[in-house]
Amino acid sequence: MAFFEVIQVANQQEAAAVVQEKLDNELKANSLNVLGLATGSTMIPIYNNLIESSLDFSEVIAFNLDEYIGLEATNINSYAYFMHQQLFSSKQFKETHIPNGMANNLEEECERYENLLNEHPLDIQFLGVGENGHIAFNEPGTSFDSVTHVAQLTDSTLGVNSQYFNDNEKIPQTAFTMGIASIMKAKKIILLAFGEKKRPAIEALRGDDITEQWPITILKKHPHVTVITDIN
Figure 1 (cartoon, one colour):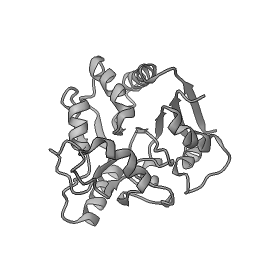
Figure 2 (cartoon, helix red, strand yellow):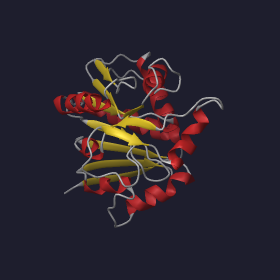
Figure 3 (cartoon, helix red, strand yellow):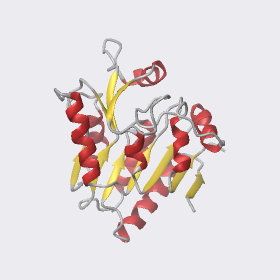
Figure 4 (tube, one colour):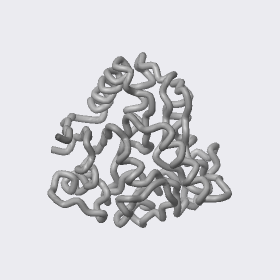
């Protein structure tokens, strides 16, 4: 029997407390060796709370879902920079892995990252969700069988992400992303969704259909999913 849990919270601070408790339990049970992380504003309160906590990740390997292609790790809009600022500079991990946005050979970088994921199976993967139902950068129409690949970002995603870039900065049109099949290999998934703009995606998850037009819906086939949301 699949485990599908929805935890209703009042706000992101309450969600952060729920996440901390879940990770604490996993660490105490010695069942958290590899943790999949996400970026974006959804995760900032989560990471702030983890930094302030006493949780010890020094024996945990971390993998991130994605990275823009063409951005140096030192670029303030790269996800490598985000993770350093929001978590890694304050919490020690055994290893941290993020796709190399400056890789010369995109196909080789995809293979390298997917091979690392296969060598270190994810115990827990955190996910946010886009307004169009994308998970990681797996946009609508992405094959459920996809592994780590180069994603072409949709106008919807580019529009949302433009808020993080200055007016004179060009937003990367492509990104490395874990594929849907890569994500689904995780033993447990924790999805976080806040605000009315995410309601259509959550409604799709609550519905009966499983369709590549709403990538989030594949989670209904996963054996262990927790959804933490303020959407009733």
